[in-house]
Length: 309
Image (tube, rainbow, N blue to C red; front, top):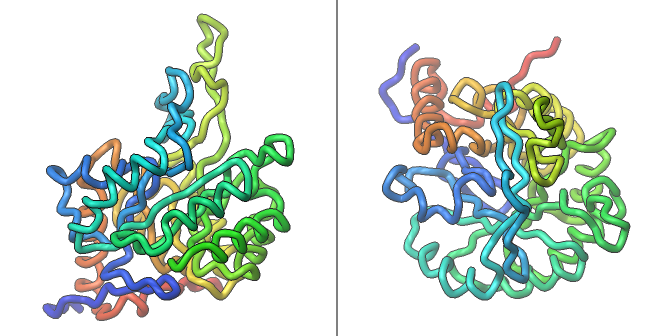
């Protein structure tokens, strides 16, 4: 039944309320301002900034982005301007926006995550933190924080101890059972979980017989990873009681609806931003229209409605 009443698309991520479930993914949308002339930013549910570290980081040498069948590989290396410049140059703009801005943070020691969280404590214009635990842990020989439930839990606790903002932990898919990590960060007090980060991959130039990425390996994103992401989101939704944010290859509203039906309370648009800067708004409009066409008045009537019996 087609309804004329606007559906209520409000969703909650712990203490954080979004007016709709459409977010932008870290590393694909800059700091938001880069898209302001292309996207109606204030229509979005939230923006997630590119990863922030204590010190400025130049990232990896080029080439560091290449296309692959149904996706892309990136080895940007988490390039960013560092904490001091971020607070001075980016935060004032966030205060002008009418939507939540979530800051993605990362480090190579647990202490670095704690220092970042403390530095952002009380800063106006920042609604929440998204913690990237896919980074190499220097103290464990380069093993990612996100593959060890004990370390992931300790890291989450450290961030929570040093912040007054909701904490979202972003999980890596490069692990045998992602549910183990999800349960660990939930037990540590995380307010929500986002997944998945990119899958590790590589590509080779058959003429030169050299890696196409200067870094050899990179993170695979785009439609190629969507079935993997969707299944992992479903698994985690069944395993934890805190809200889950789904991402990984969402290109249009149909993809987004799959994640919501699987139980995600919000979704993030990533690689699609490189294809169409306005992809996030088109996804939002598609979700709205689907709800109206199917007599869905509240987003909660859609979330987690997968029928498996």
